[in-house]
Length: 216
Image: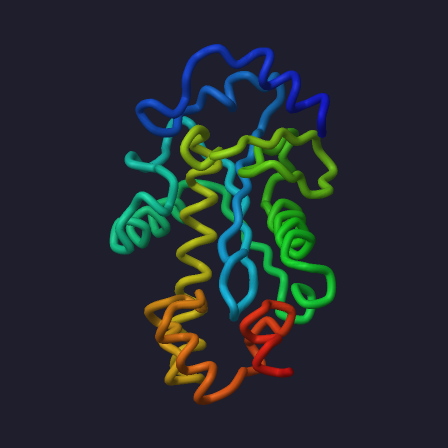
């Protein structure tokens, strides 16, 4: 919501990105609980888009939370397990048909909505990574680069990334040859070569250019 974003910008004074994410964005919100929401998988040619919503316990959360892209796979896995033990965590997805029907942005927002609605406790405010907010029952504020500013969003980025990576590794066993266990569905040289040789699978996004071109 625009008014919520303006309120957050107005009230936030301390920098939040110099030393990594903090609770500074959460602290500017006069509502609780606050959840962080992020997604993984907007860019790949295959697989669903996955969103996560997380409400952290400020007295009990793992150290080292950060933008998932800045962490090693092993560290992401460790933090994922820790977060599932001490935080309220939920997942929402949008499948291939939804991505191809409504476009990847709208599918990502739908996945975020589903993730937020699946939380055990209804949040009173949601911090969203990026510049587009999903339709939620609570007020929202968008933070560009939020996974490097807000601990709640950083936690959501880890949950979303690990969940999707695990899913793509599993799909890679069912559809060998595309290297999904390595490229997670992104358009790597290996994936593009396999797409040309083997053709698309039911998990490929037919609205994405390389796949669409392959289908004529």
